[in-house]
Amino acid sequence: MAGRWTDTDVERVRERLAELVAPLPGVVAEDSFGHISFVLERKRLAWLFIDHHGDGRLALCVKAPRGELETLTAADPDRYFRPAYVDGWVGVELHEVPPDWTEVGALLEQAWRMLAGERAVAAYDAALPNRASTAGEDR
Image (cartoon, rainbow, N blue to C red; front, side, top):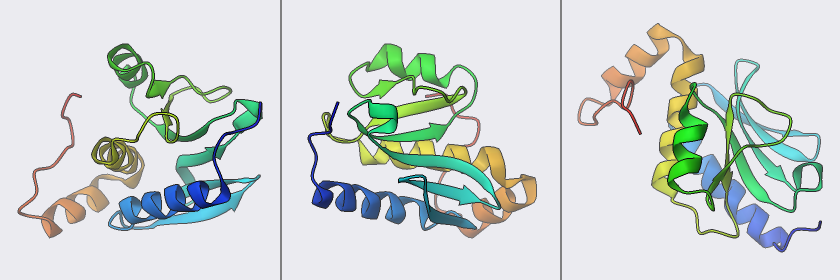
């Protein structure tokens, strides 16, 4: 099933995701198997999937804690989905349903916190004293 997005749509989404991960220390974007992955020290925290295994979606696949997928898909099944072939991750539709970029940013930060390590998270939080930490918050 072919996607209904254009190359311009893909580039716009890629740029927005790059803006959202830019404040997260150590995260880099890499082209990977026709998709774009966001990586922290060789640990993948998210993918921008472009028609992943022919699913017809332009979507983010982001690492998430246990139970997050079920919570999000129950609350908004048009926006969130279970990605094929990747357990422990949340799929986020980025084209057919207008993205909630604030939520996408929170999911990316949550994934970074899962992978970054205690010292990196503490340093990140200390550098942003006016911003409430999202660590441990329920969604």
